[in-house]
Length: 166
Image 1 (spheres, one colour):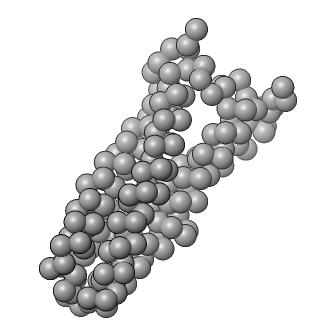
Image 2 (image 1 turned 120 degrees about the horizontal axis):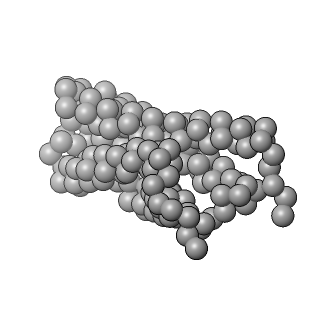
């Protein structure tokens, strides 16, 4: 099996850290943008914030960061001595990464898209729409939970708490 040498692993680690910072930083930015909506008094501004949330998530930061983590993790596991399942902390990272991507794809993303569409149609009346309020609540609760889990995963990567599996 081909293994990356020290310099290659350093480059890979750099790209992995950039992807992680995009994913976690983007998730944190989304939470802050959700909190901005509390002070909105104009329907077009509300729609603009929801468009910004959608754009930061889907196009430029969160999804590219998540898939960057997945891709660099696959390369790490394939072309280094870390492997896929040798260490408990690595298994934890794989579970979190795959679950977070799937949960974002099937829940967080659709909730967010729905909010953007509703606010585009209803403006400030969105705050009286039960679908909008439900999507906003679910996205804030589960988006915050996912962001915290991703932050914990960063520290698990640093401390590598679980011993090598036999």
